Image 1 (cartoon, each protein chain N blue to C red):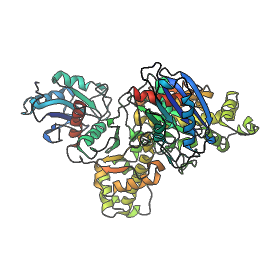
Image 2 (image 1 turned 45 degrees about the vertical axis):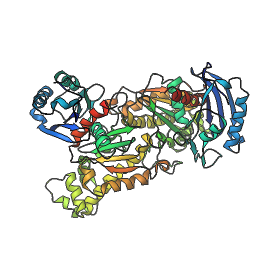
Image 3 (image 1 turned 180 degrees about the horizontal axis):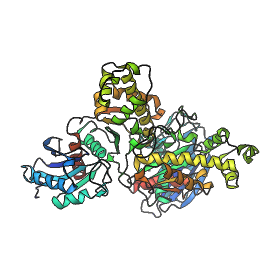
Length: 320
Length: 320
């Protein structure tokens, strides 16, 4: 594919590969998505088939000559190797050399990182962290992901696997985690963690909760019931906020961030959640960090966040 | 003071201010200490008095014209503000604008950081981390300090207070810490933590331990007794290694370091300690980090480490 760097606006192709959905879009440097397309990931038996489809679609796009690079966010995407490595939520098994495969099709620079890192870069370029050099983005979805910015740069670590706050253990011998260990933060603070809390927590309010009457308890139902005054649901929300706030208090000892930015349905849905996290953070934090750290919510929620994040990876590298 | 940058070898003045001792020395770029002087910190009622003494001494040094900068490591030393801020172990109270005070006396660039950060920079320039861009130095002394390198740079965080691994809580409602919180890592893993373990741990071997007969139990005595076959002392060492190994396993989720470098008497004394920490780290670590992380011991122990570290701060800035 030809491209002309002098054309304006310059566009990045942002691709978000998820277990259920793959979205890709063309994004300009101001964070405007000029086009977006979505596929069901499971309709493609191989990564090659998906890539052929994306390549075909782009060749028919009026924007194709403005493209300057490709950014991909994917579960277990490794920035250094350019590979998806053993992603449990994808049909494509083993190691997939995604960057190499894209480069074969497009004569463009290609970068890959994991979905939480892409979200952090998106927040830094287009969202609620444009003023920050030191912050940690926390994604609250099925699990808990994180992307760490220090001194203005995303942290990859020596092997590309830095920023796995969801797997720091917070309760000794606590809940069993998909990683094989016990008590990881994401077993408490995530959509699935919230549902486990509903099942596991005891309370005198529990027998009277509306959650006993819903056909399937989801995190969304819990937060909505809490909004509507259900006392047990409120206790579950408070419990979740207390575990997260206490954990983030300790993790300030790593990088002393100016803010934690919370992303995802849980963070956004309940008006009170971020302020309760902040309350528990301040209750638990070392004195030198007191009253210094913001708890913010993402500005990209519901705004093609994943595609913006993946595209932001391109601009962050091209402008570095 | 005059100085001539063309003279060789170029020298940095490294100053280590501790609660008991202040050491300062002239260090060349290869880590050779060409002169070193030590004072009792408490002999100086003010920081001004100490600085006047250092300034006076240097004016009579044959090396003074080769000096290119001054690096200071001090408890609670803040890199960004250039101040010592409320150091509990110093007689000088409140906020001491150390960098400003030095600049008044010497027409040279001056940098300040805390003692653990200085040790990490020393290890990177002159010690056992010269080959590493991503590592964490852990100092095991009265407390537990840390200095974090990511992508080749020391991490300061947004306010200069990053890297306080000693105050991450590892035991919910655990031992009381000087910081006012409960269960911090340094209440278990430090010289004082080891002594507390001797007092608090129960064991069928405890009644027969040689530690019951020593006049004052110290961490050194515990490690020495363990070396000599005392079963209870060995249990205390193993307990300490297990808490540290398990904690460092979790903290890999932060920056994915290539190595942890252990510094201080505890780390060096007992031949087996580092390998036991490694054992417990591997037992507790997330699968993506398995068999990737070294546990090393410092190469600077007993080699003017604090002065080397403070001097290394100068070279790291001048050569940046």
